[in-house]
Amino acid sequence: MKILTNIQRTLAAGLACCALGITTHPTVAAENAFEALPDAIDAYVYGYPLVTMEMTRRVMTNVREPKGSHAPMGQFVRMRQYPNSSYRDVTAPNADTLYTTAWIDVGQEPWVLSLPNAHDRYYLFPMLDGWTDVFQVPGKRTTGTGPQTYAITGPGWKGTLPAGVKEYKSPTALVWLLGRIYCTGTPEDYAAVHKLQDQISAVPLSAYGKSYTPPPGKVDPSIDMKTAVREQVNALSADAYFNLLARLMKDNPPAAADQPMLAKMAKLGIAPGQPFDSSKLGPVAKKAFADVPKIANEKIMLWMKEALVTGDAKLENGWFFTTKTGEYGVNYIQRALITAIGLGANRPQDAIYPTSEGPGVLESYTGAKKYVMHFPQGQLPPANGFWSLTMYDKDYFFVANPLNRYSISARQNLKPNADGSVDLYIQNQSPGADKESNWLPSPKDKFILMLRLYWPSETDPSLINGSWKIPAVKSVD
Image (cartoon, rainbow, N blue to C red):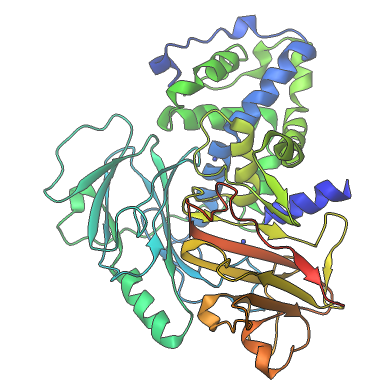
C-alpha cells in the first residue's frame, strides 16, 4: 500500500433527463444489494465532479466582498503575490502564475468577460463547466494576447449579442473562470500583472456597456468554511448526495453521451430535478445504499493505481503524471479522480504537472543527500509557455531557504556546462557560489518535486507524445 499511498499524496497536490428521452421508473429499482450497489456506485462516481464543484463554489463565494482567495458570485479573486514559506492555506502553491478567478451563473442570462491587451505576456483563461470539463480556454496559445470580449451563454440561451462580442456557449449554468497570468515575481512585474488583473472584468449581459457595481455577497452561516471541501463531499450520506446531484443536474444538464448512465440512474430513482427517495428502493437495497459513499470514494482513489495500467497515468523515472485532464468524455472515473486530487485541472495542451516524491516508488527524497537533475544539451523541458521545477516539503508547502527560491526555471539564468548540458542541483546546502544559479534549495528532511510545463510542446520533443522523457533525479552521494 505504500506505493499507492505515495501516488495518492503525489497527485493530491500544486469534474435534463427528459431532454435526452429518459424516463424514471423507481418502482423497478433493484431489490437487493448485488443489483443496486454497483449501479449506485457508478452513479456516485459519475456525479462526483458536479457535486464537488457546487460545494467548492459555496465555500469560495460565501463572503460579502472579495478577500484573499474568496469572492462573491460574479466577482473576481485577484491574487496579488506568490505565497511564501509561511503559507499554509492550500497545498502545492505555485510561484509562476497569479490567479484571477470568478464563479458565475449563466443560467438566467449570459455574462460578458473582457480581457485586456496582455502585450504578448503568457496567460490562459480556462472556463470550466459544472462537470469540470474545460469548454473554452482563451489565452496566448489559442486566441493571442490582444484585447478580447466574450459572452458566456448558458444551456438553451438564444439571443443577439453586441457587436464585437464573441459567444462561448457553456454546457451548464455553473461556470468557473480560472485565469492564470505568468509573473516573474519581481516588484516591477507584480505591478505590470496587477494592472492587467484590474482591467479584467465580467458583467451580466444586461449591464454590458453600462456602469455596473456588483451587489455585495450573501453570507450563509450554515456553510462550513473550515473543513476541506473534499471531506465535506465525502461525508454526505447517499440520500443527501443523490438529492443534491439530482437538483444540480436540472441547471447543469448531462451531456448527450451520458444517456446510458442516466438510464442506469433512472432505475434507482435518480433523475434531473426530481428529489431522490430511497424509500422506494427495496429494503435490502436501501440498507446497502448507506455504504455507497465509502465504497465509491475508495474506488475513485484506487483508480490512481489502475490508471497506470490503462494508460490514463504514467510513471517514468520516478515522475508520476497524466495527460488525460480537462476533457473526459465518458471516462467518468478519471474525471472523478482529477476532481478529488486536482480540481480545476487544465487541458494537457495547456499544462502538465509531473510530480515526484523520490527516485523510485519505494524511496523518498531527503535533504540528507545531494541530487542532480541533468538535462542534455537542447533537452530542457519543451514548453512554449514556460516550465519550472518547484520544491515542496513533505506536506506540499514551500521550503524556507537563504535564497527565498521556491522554484527554479529558465528565468534564473541557468548556467550551462561546457558541453551545453544543464544540471540542476537539488540539495540542502549551497553547491558553491559558481553553481547557485542552478540550485534549488531543499529542506533537511523529506521533500517533493513538481515539474510544471505550461503550453507543453505537441511536436518532437514532447512529453505529450512521449518523445521527451523527464530526466531522473539522481543522488550524487
